[in-house]
Length: 207
Image (tube, rainbow, N blue to C red):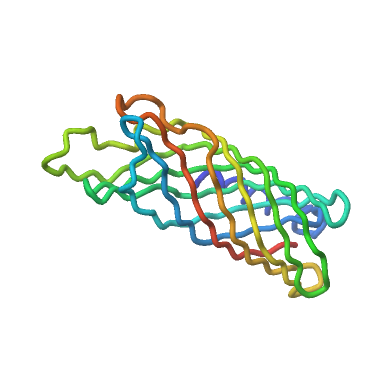
């Protein structure tokens, strides 16, 4: 979180931004994240995890290719994880994600719907678990330590932009983030596969 805050502070302190000379298409957004994990234990899919609720914050930039096509780049901070009700374990990971998405927008003066899709690289820089020992379970409980530091996946976004001022639009967005890579580091002898997935609901401003 400190890394992202520093980047935003540097950006907003630049004279080009203060004078409104930065390239059109910059934006910010934040909202609700619901996440879970697909896990294989002893080569069988484990079905007893509940979704985790948290938040996300992102800065992005749209680069015009040729209407209706744009290139969207995004830097996002998010907290993801899952709840393990059988052993009363809650696991959360803090991610810094970089996305490069192709964006198709139906541009209009009032409401502009769009869809974006493309690859995503996650850097997992903080892992934590609220551990509770429960009788009858011999497996190690510190699930947070079984994640890799990096993962790769896809992001798909559906949203609308609504112009509220001459050069400012309000956006509402729903996105789905899905891992393609195996996110386990192999330290647990019985866990063979981790794959994160999350749904985001965002509100933001685009300049």
